[in-house]
Structures are given as C-alpha cells and as structure tokens.
Image (cartoon, rainbow, N blue to C red):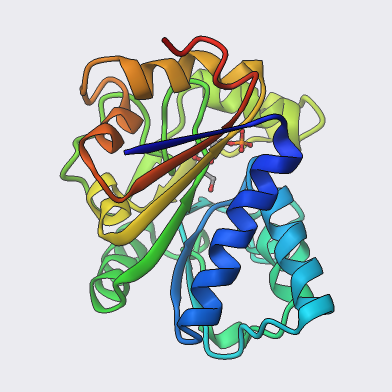
Length: 242
Ligand code: F6R
C-alpha cells in the first residue's frame, strides 16, 4: 500500500484525476470502478476539465459503480445513477451504454446476482474509492466479510446520519435504509485501487486503515495487505497518522 499526502482536497483530487487520465490515455478501453459521495467530486471535476481542454476520450471506457440505494429510481436526484450523470457521465464523451450502476429498483436478490455476474466478466483496471467515517468502503459496513460479493445491506445509523447531512438536507427520514453494494472481494478484484479521503471527519478512519489491525470490523483495513493500493489524503485526513 502506498500513501500520498497532499496539502488539501483540491490537490488530492488533481492527483487522482491525473492518475485516471493517464490510465485512460494508455488504455482507451479501460474498465473503471467508480464511487459516488463528496470524495470523488473534485476528481471528476478535473477529469471533465481535462476532457474539455485536452480531449481525453472516454468513448471506449466502461465503468462499474460501487453501489446504489434500494428503492430510488435512476432519475431521483439522490440516486447514485443521477449523481454519476450530473458529476461525470453527462460531461464527457462516454457511451452511456458502457456505464453501469446497480439497479436499486429491481428485486435486490436478482440484482445482486446480475451485478455479480456482470462484474465477474469485466475485471476492473482501476477502482476509485472513498471511505466512510466508520471505515466502510462501498457500503460494506463494519463486520462485512472480506470475501463478500454484491449484496444488499442495511445501512448503519452513522452512515445514514452522514448521508442525511451531506445529501438529504439533514432529513434522516429521507435516506433509504438499504443499498446494493459491490462486496469487498469485488472491490479487490481490480488491477489497482485509488482511495481518496479528505477532512478531519476521515482522520480516524484513515488512522485505522493505515495503522490499525486488519479486521472485518474495519472494512478498509484489508487494503493494507495489498501492494496495488494508493491512499490519497489531504493533511487533515492524515492528521492522526503515526
Ligand atoms: C460511495 C461509497 C461510499 C463513500 C463513503 C464516503 O459510492 O461507496 O463508500 O465513498 O461513504 O462518502 P463521502 O465521500 O461522501 O464522504
């Protein structure tokens, strides 16, 4: 595992974007695993800027997102489908048919099987991740097996609170209580993993990821065991590291 500490969120975002852009330039057919949430927004912003300025093309790139809330239609403003269109897909030349996000409106068991089958056929070249303040990756909450594949999860209270503040105007009632997520084994099935974290809110989780024991109680700690992982933090997120 490699650790990159940048001065602030903007610089961390620029670093991640440049990494992804270089990958796409080298391999125009790249398969990317993508994340939603506040963490990757800056990365996507710089990818869009580069696409507009330098013409990096995503025509033959395909993408597989980590997760989606259960019960939200694609065009619901809080759905992760909507998020990806608004923050990346609609602003680059990607073929929308090559973008994949779990379908939160289908029968969850059926969708878990279908998305698992899809992922098993499309190995990712890079997986972009954020991290929850409780150490979750994707929606793999503490206690999830490191061997897990796509599954339906009940979100923990802390995750519902975080997401209510960030995306639902503080309205906890509005946050769906279930989601479909890639499992940890699916996340690890990528040539490389890039995790971006910023702000004090993430400092404890980054400390546990980097310096703590490898345990299913701290899902992101599994990343410690891999050489192909880069953790990109700003100073605040890295502030508790030894
Ligand atoms: C999002 C995802 C989550 C987020 C995590 C951090 O697709 O899988 O694991 O990366 O909850 O969220 P933010 O970036 O909003 O702090």
